[in-house]
Length: 230
Image 1: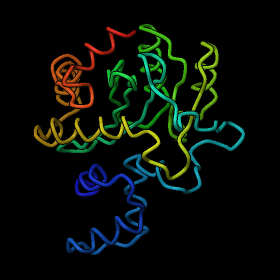
Image 2 (image 1 turned 60 degrees about the vertical axis):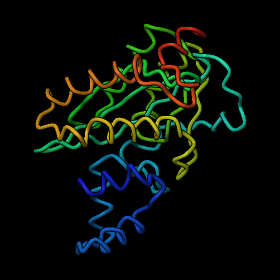
Image 3 (image 1 turned 120 degrees about the horizontal axis):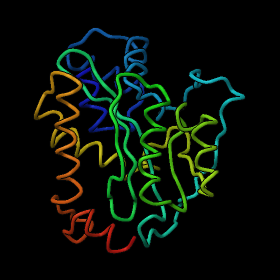
């Protein structure tokens, strides 16, 4: 799982077959069934075109992707969210974050030891206490297609956009955020426990928002750009 996590961070477009071949080339005797099971445990199968069995079909609603060729000209025009796997010395956790596309500012985040819906809703409520976006983009994961999550967005009059199945780069800004979080923080610190990971990530997101200059933002910080145009 540690190796899969690192390779997935490098190549989020790899499916089960490519991940299996990559592990086999590293000398590991694994088959596709085992790799699929591990990726599902890590919460990473949402990017691959495969049946979703986490929520009954009548409990889910899929929305079209709204952001193709849409110019992102101001803060709070588009927010997006995603969940990623955070490895620990003994076990693992899941991290969810909500980001403003224009500024790359992380409005809210949370850690959980399960993929239950509650920690995603809690993060959404925290973000909505700060502002309201015009469009909210997610993948087609069970948490984000659930009635509770989509109805909460609809109550605020927010337009819902969802990535196409198997199109990891539809949510490219959050994918870039995960690479930064992992290579600049998680892999360097090798967190032992959930509380330790929470404290470390809290420091990192403060640094990411307020101190880390982004080349794509003309070397300004996400906080500078977000509050200048919010």
